[in-house]
Amino acid sequence: MRGTRNRTLAAVAMAGVLALAGCAKDSGGTGGDTAAPADQGAQGCVTAPKPPAAAPAAQSQAQDSEKVDASKLKVGLAYDVGGRGDASFNDAAAAGADKAKAELGVPAISESTATGTESEDSKQQRLNQMATEGFNPIIAVGFAYADSIKAVAPKFPDTKFAIVDDDSVQAPNVTPLVFAEEQGSFLAGVAAVYKSKSCHVGFVGGVDTPLIQKFEAGFLQGVKAASSKAKIEDEYLTPAGDISGFNDPGKGNIKAAAQINKGADVIYHAAGASGKGVFEAAKSSGKALAIGVDSDQYNQKTVENAKDVIITSMIKRVDVAVFDFIKAVAKGDTTTLPKRFDLKVDGVGYATSGGKVDDIKDVLEGYKAQIISGAITVTDKPQK
Image (tube, rainbow, N blue to C red):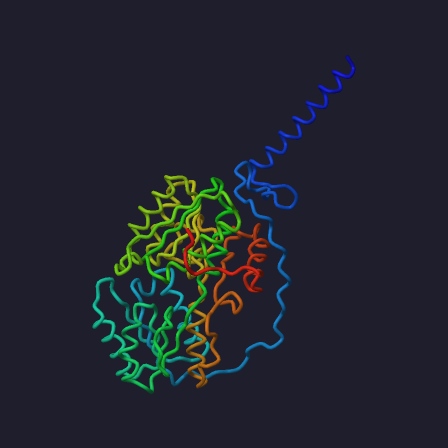
């Protein structure tokens, strides 16, 4: 009788152990330090081990205190669709020019914005007019200006041109300003997983082009690195050739709302001004969060009404690139600029405004350190 009782107690104890193990599995843990963070609750989306802590950032002893005088420069800014006020890509470029005006003494800035339906001739005319009027340097904000720069720059060999997001133009007076968008987007993917309650996230791209595919690729890889079971919605607003996807908040709203209705509760957009619609969809749902792009969108006035759902933004420091280019032109040497603005040179990153990712900053910094060291290589082609 006693032996039977002992065997029964042992069976009960074993059942309890198995039940606890099952709970751990359901919460996303695999034992030891790979268990999901406490804030993941019952969903347990995180399945990957927490990355090693990043080493403390070395403090630079040599500050760039060199005084540069840009008072003889007249800067031309040729914006992509959306222009100043898009709360994203173009606004970042504008911020860089504004900083050059305030800190370097640039006396004049000419701004002109592309429309969604304009011809290639219109783009060339915009650049030609700026160069003819003596603006130098001229910065084309967006890959859509590649053919125009290629046609116009040789006509004005003494004018310095820069083009953001394109490195196809090989000319002595043209400087490419390109970024590792996939690296910053990887961190956005990690943040989405850690903040998702449903283990279901989404990506909304503006136009299906190789550039925006870099954002998509990094995001998908980051999500999968943090979780083996996260579900991902992945869609574009318009196909290649239709650039209206960068300036259609209504379409962004509809697409994001559809993803939310399917269960996604964290949406990352790389859609320019259309991202306003993504934020509005997340806010009106009452159950979703959003991740911005290019600028720190939590602090953008044009999307202020939705700032409470913006947990972070993948910062693409177009402002830094534009400012540094203008400064380099004023100094007479553009060869010192980075060939690619990546995580290592702080050319991309993530925003912390609002404190909504403070609790996972150690995780994001850990992954960031692995990317910088080469332990993680982020692809720029979507792996679906």
